[in-house]
Length: 123
View (cartoon, one colour):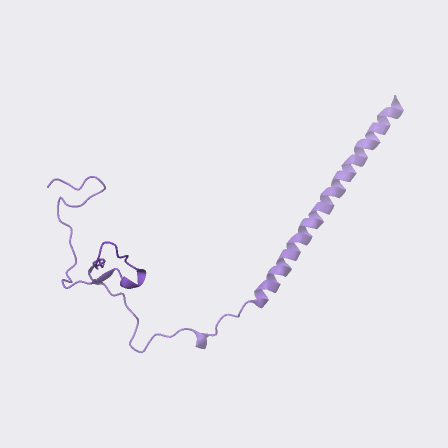
């Protein structure tokens, strides 16, 4: 009986050592993978173009900064085919779907005419 117990203790001690060795080897593999990823990242970054120097940075135009232009636009009418059997081709359409409006006063909110969906107010 004493022999079987000591053999079990030896087996348990050896499996613990194997577990520790496996954990150590796994840690080495993970550290190696991280170092390889760092090395590969540096190689990729070295192939990228370098940052522009201060004298290569974009400059403001002589006229100053470009500002946003706000204007009221209105829908452009869709051209109609001359005959019902004639097809309207893409080249017959205008480049833009809107044009500058004659009246440049922006539309304002009127009471009872706006709100969330379905609550446009009473007319």
